[in-house]
Image (cartoon, rainbow, N blue to C red; front, side):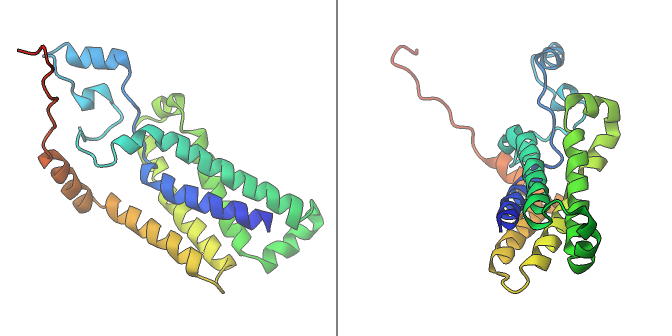
Length: 206
């Protein structure tokens, strides 16, 4: 069905986007200037007041640039999945919704995941980050609950053929392991040990 096809896309996007569910804001030029005015050195904690640590060697640092976009795309796919269900499966027959929910309880699980994604999408802007302050990160950790609900929703649909679901579950497990503090710290240490490449001297360099 068209709705199931869109759900597979939403599941894939969610598995990619969950690693950046707790995205950090990129420092503004003014914050960088203020941080650099002390000693010509940038303090990541001062440049980004919402970050907990100065995680300069985060192995997913480069990925953080597109975290918000991936999260919003995930929510968009989930909304399209809901629209396809309403148009092509329910056929806008609202009187049949109750019977369909009792026959397909995984719809309720998917709806809970969508509510979480909508909440996170609505609070992914800078104004919400400033307004929520320290409460923003705990709120956006609900992305992990959304991922679990999406996997359960998908499992309930395709339980007769678990090949594709198993691939998504393996990707989710890998991402969750990368988010564990011991694993994350280990990867950060490996990143710090990596030597910084020096540019080769030009023909006119002394």
